[in-house]
Structures are given as structure tokens and as C-alpha cells.
Length: 235
Image 1 (cartoon, rainbow, N blue to C red):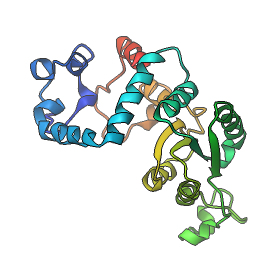
Image 2: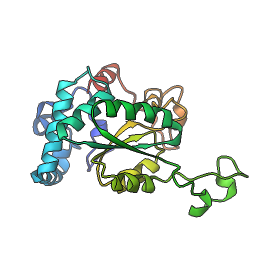
Image 3: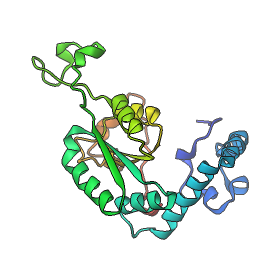
Image 4: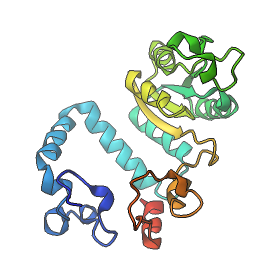
């Protein structure tokens, strides 16, 4: 297949030229620098915003200082401190409330003011968005819909400067990202089958989880080579 748009996913492990700043010399034909340098140039102008510039600086410093030493929770605390944030919000799945309580206590122990909103807030029935009884997980009884827009609004009104997503479902998390006025980071993504470790489906796509493939699966499916796994783990 000939790619005329950015196709970084197909860059060979031995290339990855952007790591060394050698995209022009060694990048494949579908390298962003080859197919859409204008987009790269345009995006760079956004760093003229002082806030965006500072986020870039502090997140990069956290990456360096905590590289392979800090957990994600520690990275979140360090980044928030570097940014001078004082109010942090937690948008949690109702099934993660116990984890949200622990996270909230950890954040408070670092001096942050913490607010949290669960996905089922308001107890709005799923029928309100047009779902039928047969479309519920458990037909015949009340099921509250996940309400990420309300989660975002609650945390917006609380004046949160930085929000953490904790286990929201696919699509629901997307709505939260869209309506949150504050920056958002993700601590946990929802994957009920893989104990919330969705990358397992990619690591085992050619074996235990081959069902993830669609009808147009290539004859020779791409697999993650050993060296690729090492780089992924340390990236």
C-alpha cells in the first residue's frame, strides 16, 4: 500500500528517524515530514501561547526526571506541582470509586484541593437518550446512563485546573475530553476483559485475541517485534 498521508504506525523499528532528528534523511515516504510538513509547521505556531509553551516544558521535564522511576500517579503529582495547579478534578467510572477515593487522598496528601464526579451522577435513565429496554445491560430495570458531559460541567464549575480520567468507557471519555475546560490526563482506561490493560489485545493480536481483526485482515498480519516491545516499554 502506498501512503500519501502520515503513516507513522508503519515506520520500521530500525528507522524511527524522528528520534534522532533525521526525518528528512531517513524517514520513509509516508513520514509526516515528507507528506505534510505544513501541518508540523502550523502546529509549532501554537506553542506561541505561553500556557501551551509551559505545558510542553513541564511535561517534558517530568518525562526526563521520572523516566522509568516514577509511576503514572507520581508523574501526575509532579506535573501538577510544576504547573502550579491547586485544584484537581477526578472524572471516575462508578466502578472505580474506591480507586478514586485512594487517588483523592494521595492528591490531598500533596496539598491539592480535589473534586470528583462519578459517571452516573444525576441518575439519568438511559431512555432519556433514546435507548430501548432491550439495549440495556440488564433489561427490565433502571439503568443510569454515563453522563461525562455532566462530569465535565461539575468539575468546570468547581474551578478545576487539571482533570484526571479514571476508567471512563470508550466514547464517554471522548465526551469528557471535549467538554472539560481544564487540561485532562488519563490514569486508567476501561477494558473490562483485560483488567483495564488494553494493550494486551495488541500484544496478542496474532494469537489469543485474533478476534480483534476485521474482515480485511492482511495475509501477513503485522506483529510487534521483540525490539519493538522494548522500545514501547521505554518510550
